[in-house]
Image 1 (cartoon, rainbow, N blue to C red):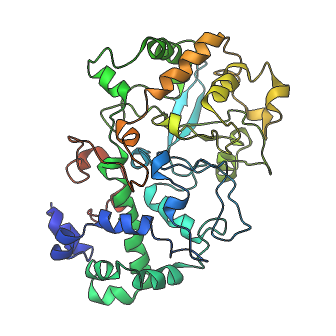
Image 2: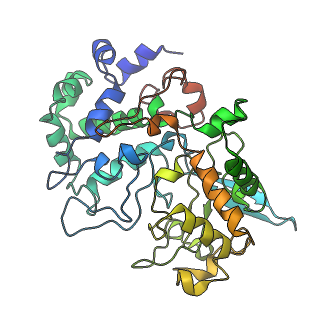
Image 3: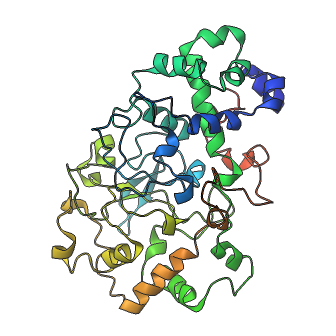
Length: 384
């Protein structure tokens, strides 16, 4: 087993540059760089606002080109590094019939197998940063203010390779998104689970009970542990919630799998920091948490209120749509959602670039065991 430093050297990252300027530091520079779009002016942070848990408060995000707009609401990047790579799991139903479910994958439709694939695409998407290709991305990176650090992080002969320079940018973004500030696990629900029983107020405690029981939220937003020793509030699966239509029909997962029964399905998001990430659903069609809980509760009873949905034939009617929650239970459920907000985000002041990671959160390097199930290629320091 080679040392961490040896693996860095194998990737062309020198010991001196690794000590002085980590891949995550490069990723931070790239994340906020508005010169990596055509025309210039758009960065990753343009659609992933740190003050909003790295989500976009607009239903749909405008692109670098002034008359182009995306088709989906930009999701939060908090805990994105903990999303499982896409996998297929065989399951048996109550009748003993074998079927399968898809879990994980990045983007809401799972079209990127893992985080490394995901960070590449926005650079070249015409509705986003609109670059023509890796040659253009590499040219812009070579004249960036941090180009010296990029160059030091590659073998000398690789600096002229557009593919190598672009690849370093992708891996740097992955390293940045794996930083502790994106996974602090310091919401009040974490304090409650740690034994501080007064961390939740009475309404939030009642809402937690609704979340587990009558609201059926925990069916998909697991409160158990998985890739991390604390709950992320998702099963990483896919579902069609019956979101109100907005614009052209969006096939979601069904576009990837070409299966009719998966049309309109989107990956179940983490609920951590959900109170900061309005508007909701894949197309930003629900404006507030209150409305979202009402939608889950009475979607099937009030079709005129919510309007048509893109693929009614695949909508989940088993776990939502007629939950029979009272007005008070809905309000308690909304209250509980505020207990899922990380304190590090709430402490941000206007003008703060990033939230601070709380003390005690494992560093990316020391926490590598929790990412070991991921392909080696996603780890900037792993063998390739």
